Length: 176
Image 1 (cartoon, rainbow, N blue to C red):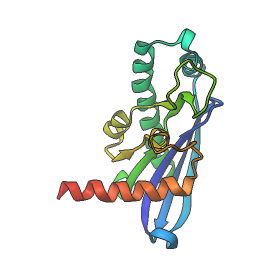
Image 2 (tube, one colour):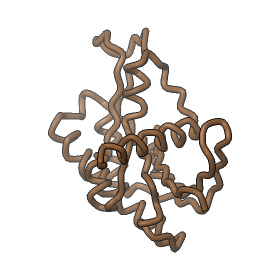
Image 3 (cartoon, one colour):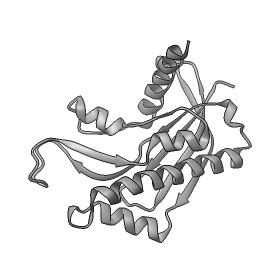
């Protein structure tokens, strides 16, 4: 057994969450990843409807975004617990959770979609809430990090997993 990690991803279809538990061996270019199990959890019609409304400036507001950020964090945290139960894996054996969050608005570079000329993106699903529910370290903000570095946000799952391992290692160093 290597290191267990959990990846959470949602898509622009707003249909639900994909969760995967992986076993990671090695590091760098010699890393091997094996899928232990995966799970898809559909959003309820209410959550899906609220998320759709948050994707449109005309039907969104700061307070609605703020509330859904926490509610979605709870949904993601509970999905992780369901995944662990399905896999019969103890959370003590998991090194990290990597959560992309749910994109509600995205303005890529050179976009004509908004009056705002600053390339930016917004994902919700509070990683602190996920961590509180699961008791595990959670990393996220991958799209915002990529945008800050001038990227166009073409995410690769393996890159996310490898990056997450390095972030978790650095966080563990700060605990010493």
